[in-house]
Amino acid sequence: MREHGVEFIQGLLLAFACMVILMPPFLRLLRWLGMGKQIRQDGPDTHLVKQGTPTMGGVLIVFVVLALATVFNAYDASTYSPLFVLALVGALGAVDDYLNARTGIGIRGRHKILWQLVVAIAVAVYVQNHFGFNGLRVPFLGDRVDTTQIPIPFVGHSVELGAIVFIVVAVIAIVGCSNGVNLTDGLDGLAGGTLVFAFISFLIIALLNQPLQPNLAMVNAIVIGALMGFLWFNVHPAQVFMGDSGALSLGGMLAVTALMTGQVLILPLIGIIFVMEAASDIIQVGSYKLRGKRIFRMAPLHHHFELGGWDEEKITMRFWIVGALAGMMGVTLFVASIPK
Image (cartoon, rainbow, N blue to C red):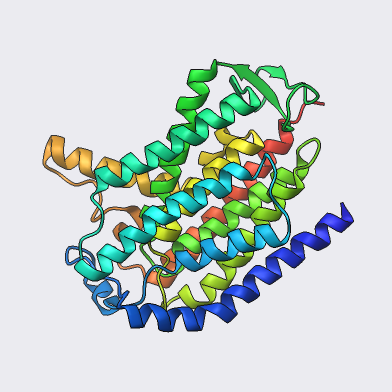
């Protein structure tokens, strides 16, 4: 465990260093390519000053994570799927960022959802077939999991629901978390910071699983370091935006990480900020279409507080605090549900 701990710290610090060193030349490349963010005219007026800020910063995050996962040989059954989602959804996001920067119009929402569904279904079917998952780990409920009978360790109890239900839940988690993080990526540092706390939570869970999942924990440590390096340039006033290349891919990766630890039902708690942001957007659209009235001043939720007079930095820091507390609660729930 001590040796693993040293490697996790090395991976985190190296990822941070790579981001800090590589980001300045990467920013020059983005400016040269004309990858400036096109700000929506129907958003808050205070965001208009961000017009032209380089976007597609998520591409560097994806590159650093995949490269360092190879350097640390962190590939095994528990990490193939998260890294696969990171790469494929990241490619979709990169195309969307490019089109947005060049034309002001990205990939249509329905087309992005279709691609996410294809990737999510492929991953869910692979995970179910490869590991034979037919149920969900539910805190305090169901039968204790016999970790000697499955190729990946899980702590907790299992409620058998069948392969189809598992696949459906997995697809919903991947697509929902991917878009939830993307909706959260609307203020400087907001998505990056809340993702750091979420990945820290699942790193701890991976280490507490029986037996531990060191490669999955290592990948999480690399992601955390890369996000911290990205935040060095993304905190207000942002020098670069994550873009869909980072938000969509990291959201999907977070959901698959939850699946691989067997704790997907704790994901909505650990990612409560992403849930709130997505829910506020759905509620706003639904209310306007059904009643012709808006519930929030503007959706997603961070814009509601922004138009209510909160400073951007205050919203970000308070959402970070909620994300950190939710992560602590998720880990606590996981530990409390370990069968004695």
